[in-house]
Image (cartoon, rainbow over all chains, first blue to last red; front, side, top):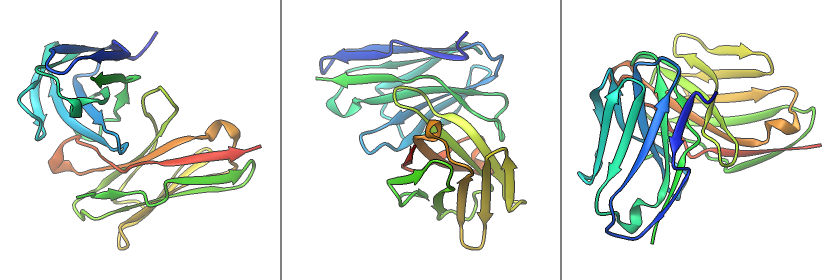
Length: 113
Length: 113
């Protein structure tokens, strides 16, 4: 019984395509996040939602649009994919927005050709 | 601008010995620090945290030390076990940033048996 799950695990696509990554957590948490791990291995936050409301929005291109249909899900849609979008994307969740330990999903490896 | 730095890309330790992983930060606003462990093809897993009001926190074989004046923290693993071989990420946050974590680049720990 996976706590934070992501689909797909691997995604290979062409430049210019639109793709979505899905995330679900069964921990009952109210806050979810998207992180990007780039080629230099840094994990950088992209977005955070608390009770379906956007609370953190880092400097991310408009081509990235998160959507939270409910507290247990946070999906990431990427339009017009570019080569530089190739990375590992991690979803995470926590209870609350202050000091809550974040639990990470296994990651989605995106490769844009 | 790396606010959290892990200057050692890798560390190799003999089984049974102590592993010391270091982390430095530049933002004096940070008041909460965490260590995450990551195996290949998996998401980061929370290990241990420390608040800036403390200088030490211990959990089994893992101890984190915080030196606020030096803006430095370290993770001690005693005794080291082969299963500890992984990438260790240091992360920091502060109340005004909500639960946004700023990660270091990680240190690869190899424990030799």
